[in-house]
Length: 389
Image 1 (cartoon, rainbow, N blue to C red):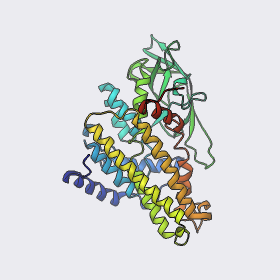
Image 2 (image 1 turned 180 degrees about the horizontal axis):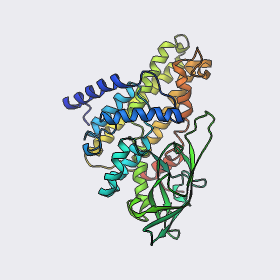
Image 3 (image 1 turned 90 degrees about the horizontal axis):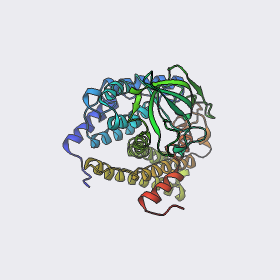
Image 4 (image 1 turned 120 degrees about the horizontal axis):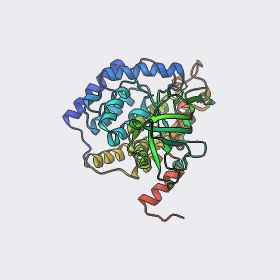
């Protein structure tokens, strides 16, 4: 594995760094899970698109730069280094888009991808249901064939839909053959949330952010053109999406190396508190773990460039980055002590209260994208070859 970057990749880094430093918002934006914050984030996302930094690895005809995976990694590092806003379009760009590139028809790609890149169509993920979370094969929402209309009639409920209250479209799994085995008979459907029969209902959160939602479907018509990857082939299509969700595209290492650099800076600023050897060890361990994830990702990209699939290795990624995120924020709260509990507007708040907000979000990491308990089962069975009970 070559750990050096080419002159062209260094030039790409310099160009990305220059644009980001000149254009990143001077102050942190409000949470993207609030109505005001989501709107502000969309303004930022559209400025990224106009400068062709929104989807750098995509073909130019879809708004990208035809950048390599290495250049994509470079951009993600620079994006996190300058503290640029969280991507509220991430479920579309980082999860759905790779699946559309792999399974979509040319018509679907031409119709879906440009509007996604431009932040005109905003996608949320509709997988979990009240009785089917990590056990995705247990979904009950169904789609019944409407031959005369050339499509499907969808009924059911999806829950824990991130930013569903603000998005315009949903991608999800629905059972199209109720008599098939658990992991069969599902189709991957693309549904506008303004379609007749769709109801979006916000789910309240303790932190006050209102983007979370549950989505109800009552006889919603979905045309055949909005089936991705073939009827009853949804499980295989969804597994491609989970590889993106658990792997490097949703949580690139730049996010964590930048966070750990800020953690080291916080340690220096906290002076006497940071003199505790235990706290210093925690900070050092978080930094080393982030660097380990960066190096592991370099190996992953090497494999992908050489045509090898990550497969179940994406579960290793997911367990690592999600638990690293919790540990590094726990270390920050220890450094802050009682100051960690101050709201961002409090005069004595450090870094605008960002560490507590980040900690609260990090706790969801071991749950979303498939709980870490399930991921450890995948690792044991598919990577280590251990028997199932």
